[in-house]
Image (cartoon, rainbow, N blue to C red; front, side, top):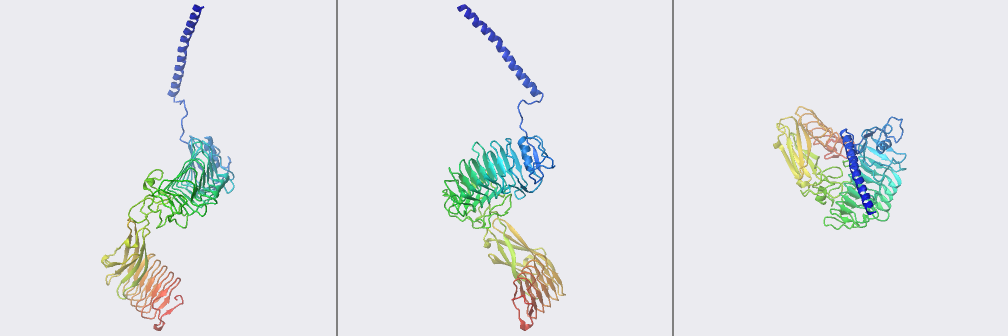
Length: 596
């Protein structure tokens, strides 16, 4: 039996030796087959597709295969199913993009199809001010399923209504850029209800949340990872907690954003937190109820609280500070969405942490896409502003604010100028003046005077010359911004002329002869001369000086100053608050009742 057992084992071994080469040959055969398929250009694994381009060409919400147009509802279905759907056609479906050839408002009759595309879907509007997707205060606008990815940009989501997430309920990966969420309402998360706890995220950049409301989380209720950059939350409200954001779990990072005018019935008008989210270079202010902040916050530096509820502790952060936000609130200050401007004197100016502004995701830009940092406080050192808005270098201002004629017989006058600048003190503004007609009015005959905001320009035309010159007054600030003002000077002859001004500021000299001077628009200075003249101020705040002779002075529109001179003159102020400096009935002056 022992010898029989050995023989049996040997037989099994021989059998195994015969089987092994067969298996190897089978494996080689499979490999050869795969190689052959690859050689024929037939891939053995799926290849990612670039994605279809779907164009929505109607504001209709219909899902109708016979209407000849592609609605947003139909386009989302095509993207979700990776195939042509009704009139929404495309090729190479995968990471698809939906764009729009129309503008206006798409009013939904029911919530749009849930986004299920794991390859990623981009819905790109023509601009937040140009396209609105509205829930009509009846339905939720969108839903992003777990595992799906949606990039939403350049549009407005408005007036959505739901138990959770009036605008959007997000269980996947949602990125919002250059967009607006307004007027959405829900029990939780008026604008967005973020419930993604399985790796999905919510990323918001250069966007505005305004006028959204909920029981908790007027703007956003968060359970999952959220990042907010260069964005504005204004006028959102919660019956209970978290007017702007209710943070109930997951990481939250807010950078260079502005929270203003948000309110909550209980706590956290601006933000209520659990677990200590991180704020960088962010303003939280002006909460009518609930306080600006509630709960622990990690102070990443450069933050501003106009109270003390945020408990900012970093050396670069401020409490009880003057936010200096524009009292007009949200305005179109340029850029893809409305923002709240900073005003001169704000504690937020040049008070941010520059390294935060320079790094991703801010990249030295504000919500409008304008550059950071800019010198906003006039100290000649540019630093990043706190919040979503970077105050740019505003050009100085200059205007004609009055003047006087210095002589009846020569073309000489003094013009009053008012100059100003938001960031540079008026006393530091540079003022220059040049003439384009050196024969009539050489630069040497231009004299600048005054200090601070009140400046003067005295000019004298060359004797016995007539014609036209343009004086360019240039005002420059400490940051190199300039503003120019053109003043047209026209000098008549002694024969009697009609001298017509321009639509800007003019100085008109009649000199001798019976002249008619027409100021047109702008703040003009009309110098009549020594004969009988007619001076018509036109629109604008004008100064009319008749000089010698019996003159007719017509102020017309604007707040005008009329000086008749030593002879009998006729005064007519016209519309506006007018002043006659020498109205003297005893010498024959008359007026039509328009001058006090």
